[in-house]
Structures are given as structure tokens and as C-alpha cells.
Length: 392
Image (cartoon, rainbow, N blue to C red):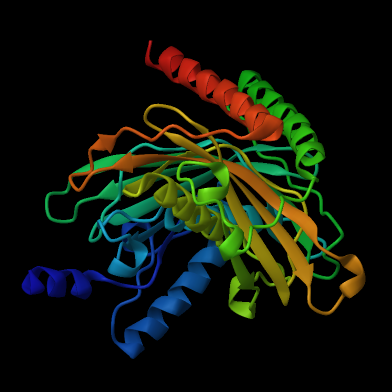
């Protein structure tokens, strides 16, 4: 076992970036990408090649591929890679391809800022030692936003077998480096057909309307956790499993604009949702899907974020957990606490062999919990109907 792991460690390397195919007349490194060998001299050479290649592909199609081997610190105690790790890699790929595209025009330099992640399904588990390939491509642009579609493939490096692990769609807005509140215009992309552009426009209008509806619904601050001595003693209630995580935003969490990376926030949300699910079931759990994640307001460096999760619905085999992210500035006290991000996560319960287990029914107490339960049930049935339709 140690010998196998040593072989894997030898394959571990910094993140590999595979730029899009260059325009005619330009060349790139072999295999269409850039890798970073172990020696310092080759690292320097590869770094220079990466810079040259990226400058050459400045006008290339807006696509990108990242890959990285999964390590023990990426996974839970069962060896499954945390959903939050995959979400973070997805956001990194989207951020790079979005920022690269938006800086192909003249004007202020800018950074693509995550505004929304559409419903994301975790199609296959990813394990320690597998190589994750994240492919990102811009599929629609409006005047001030862009859609990035991402596919995540997991590769077994010993057998060569590959599987589709995740698909996601993300929406970004470009913020100026000179003034974070200034939203830059997005360079248009070329579409294969008028129908493709129209489909993108429909997705844009749908997500825009949903974001406005969600923001109005979640402005209400989630009730605080009870004190330990006052916590509900009865299992399977909402209060029994409700959990919070408090995190101080450090420079390593932030973009060039000193605001938190969307991927960092999503990882924290997945962790809290996982704690809620595990407390409810008392078993191993895994992320099954994430409904649309809406980023309502930015979170700045130095803020304290409170990530709170609570169960809203359980079916026979799954749990829906609502996760809210509230932020408070340590310096600007006048701003007070505000709702920054919100989403619904779905988890399933597993045995030691990664087989699904029944989920204990949620004990609902009061009108508010009953209302949330019914809303969760409606989302569950709607998503189930969509899956059935896609399989036909």
C-alpha cells in the first residue's frame, strides 16, 4: 500500500493549465499544455513557456482545462473527495477562462466575479489517487455577464478509465481592478448558430429572474443556533442537526480585488451541509447535488462569515439542506451583518461500501418548518421529474 502511495506522490504536481488551441500562425508547447517538472530550472523554463503561450492565445477561443491528482487531504474518511473541493476547482476554471476572455478588449483590467452557480449534479464519486480534469468553456455572453459551462472528468491513472463526475454552469460578471463597483462590458463570443445564441439568451433571462426572486426570499436572517444546554435533545429534528461554522476571511481566500473567491465560499458551505447531514443520519454521507448557488453580495477580506445549515426536507434516500452565508465586517461596523450567499445542498447516506442507506424522516415542528418542508418536497419532485424526462 505504501509503495502504491509513493508512486502516486511521484505523480503529484502543481495544477496543470492547458490553454485553448491557438489561432493559425502560433505555436504552443507539446500536448497542447504546460507542465511544471520537479527541478527548479525546469520550473523556471516551464513558467516562461506558460506566460508566452498565454500571450499567444490571447485571441484564442475561450476554453480551458485544469487537472490535478486528488490527495488524502481532499477527501473524507471514506476516501471520497469532498464535494466542496470539486466545486472549488470548478470555480477556479471558470474564473480563469472568464477573466482571460474579458481582458481581451481595451479598457480597465478586470477579474471575473462569480454571481451564480446553476444546479449541479455530482454524477460519480471521485476518490484519492484519481486525476480530475476540469474543462471550462464560455457558452454565452450578455453585455455585462458571461456563462461558463464546466465538465469534470475523473481518471484512474492505473487503468486509464475515465468517468464524468460533474457538470456545472456558472455566471460571472467582470469587475474592474481600479474600481470593484464598476462592472465592465463583456466581449461577445461567436455562436455556431442563431439557435445556439437564442438558447443562451433564454438561460440568461431565466437565471436573472431566479436570482431576483431568491434574493427577496432569503434576506431574512436565519435564527441563531441554540446554546448547548438549550439544544433540542430529540433526534431527527431541525434544531438537533442545525450547524454553523465561523470563518475569518484571510488574504489567501481572496481574489486580486480582496474579495472572497466563490470557490472558497462554496467549499465552506459544502462542509457545513455535510455536518448537518451526518448529524441527522449518524452515517457516512456524500454530496449528491447542489441547487443554484446565488451570490447576493461580495465578502471582503477581513470579514467574519457565519455559514449556517439546516435541514428543510428528507425523502426516503436523500436530505435537502439550506445553507446561508452571512458576513460581518470587523472594521466597518456600520454595515452590520448581511446575507451574502444562499443555496440548497442535497446529500445521501452511505454505508461502509458506498451503498445508499435509508434516511431517517425529519421531524417537523411548527408552521415555518412545515412550510420549508413542503417547499423542499416540491423541489425534490420537480428535480425527480426532470431526471426521469432526461433519461427517456
